[in-house]
Image (tube, rainbow over all chains, first blue to last red; front, side, top):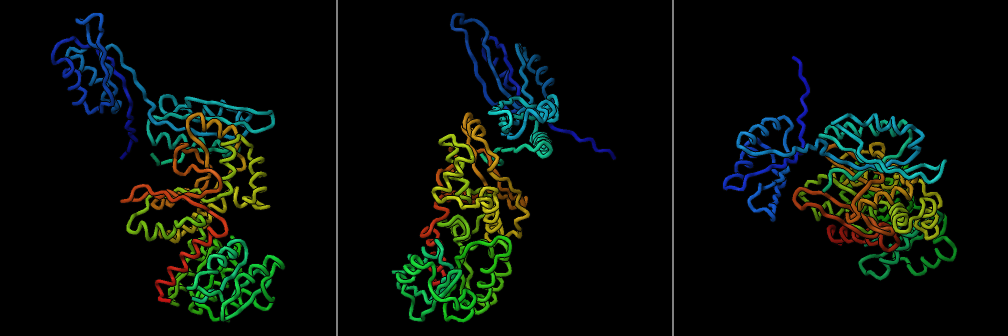
Amino acid sequence: MSRAKTVQKYIRTTLKLQLKDKPGELLAAIKPISESGANIITISHQRDEEDPGSDLIVDIVISHNESILPKLLDALRANGIMISRVGIERLMCTKTFILIGHILHTDLTDTINRIDKKDITEVTELHMIMPNMDEPSTAKLTIKAVTEAEMDNAIEQLEAIAAEKQLMIVDELGGRL
Amino acid sequence: MKVALIGMGSVGRGVAHVLKNDSRFKIVAAADSKSGTVNQEGLDIERLLQAKKDTGRIGTPDWTAFRISAEVDYDVLVEVTPTNAETGEPALSTIKIALSRGKHVVTSNKGPISLYYRELESLAEENEVALRFEGTVAGAVPIINGIRNGLAGNKVKALFGVLNGTCNYILSRMEEEGLTYTQALAEARDLGYAEADPTYDVNGTDAAIKLVILANTVLGMNVTLKDVQRTGIDRLTPEAIKMAHSTGQTIRLIASLYPDKKDLEVSPRLLSEDDPLVLSETLNAVTVETEYAGDVTFIGCGAGSVETASAILSDLLYIYDKYGF
């Protein structure tokens, strides 16, 4: 029996919805979200003060399993809700590291390429200070990943690279806060 | 209670000082590395400390630590000689002799406890005496008795510690003044916070030995120094600390322990500037994550003469009370 490894990818999505200014509209927007199993993180709405009769713009941030999104969008549309924007943030785990050593001269591009896996783990920030040619440089590196497990894989990869290129890693005290 | 004091360095002199005016205790024998002295009526501690200061010795070469441990009539052996991390000797032998004779032992020596805790503990049990070692970890901070008694019944989920005062001094000076590692180490040496050869401190070995002691003595584990993944602080750059600061973090040498995963590590780590483990000077601290009590943090002096003697005194008083002196 083959066991394909299925990774549950949790993502964070910002929905910008345009609601008619009439009773029951907000409920028509929230009910499908709640029924989809998504977790609502925040809701904010603005009304155009200049034009009291205009549409209501509502921003809703949800976190959910990636697979439910198409169905959820269909359900919202079926309720007559106009969706003006869908912003997806896939990489929800963030970790910061400091690297010390000859970072540039040990092929920085290779270091980053080996961590980057498109839409799964990405180096999203790199800040480097090189005091002198022969002295070790210091870099702050931010890695984002879709899941904790993928983050662990990225860290393992980073540790292997560090051992190979004689870089020192300082990582965050994990499992706290 | 009759005390045999082995070791007249900083801690030994602190113990002599603390016990001097306490009528419950009588120091009947003392030894340093070169000499020893015995008086069943109780030694004159002022004279002993003065002799050590003037001549570097306290008695005659024929009273060695071994001989005192084996022959003198005492109730408790206080063993406070320097740590030998490889073999635990000569303290290991001195302690074994005392336990075998049915004498209580109080020590601040990390060697025997980190290497042979189980063996020494069963020897103490067989002879129905106490083996106490609060002073081995974090000096004056009552971490061993704090976890054992104060947090009794709590499962320890994780433990994080700043267990090396030298490294803490160096890192906090790098943070506060933007010093390089080399500059901060030189400063620590000038102030007597770092030894002439600071290798064991700065490469994480000293903190790792203390972590092994905590793991084996209060968390019921059975680990050795080899089980601790170690990274030192000597490669850290001032830039690393500046970068950490830009996001409200700093760097400290942290000993971490997850008992369930048998995960022991000593390495420089990024932590929030307002974490209770972020301290200046040579302070030590331990945060224990527990089942019921939540997070509990102990902070205090990790070294020092009378500070470490305070840990020894608390062990002595435990024995004094429990064994009805």
